[in-house]
Image (cartoon, rainbow, N blue to C red):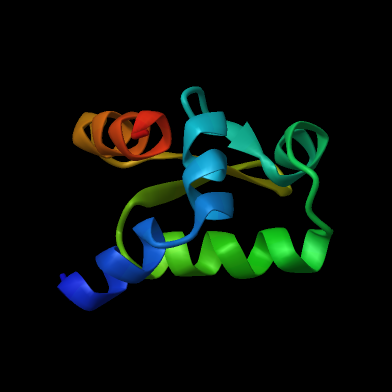
Length: 84
């Protein structure tokens, strides 16, 4: 795992909010309904999260379902979003 990819993934508030949305597994359509991103922007953020190994994917028929790879990711995300 490249730590620079992890730092890059956590450096974006949009990606942090996206990680928070993934508290339960969701497909791209569900994620689009929860965040104010275009499909293109969402795909780019998901790519960064995958490259950092923060999320995992599973196929469900034709759809790809995204979920948090490790519970520590959820904890770190909450700390960073709640930091004042």
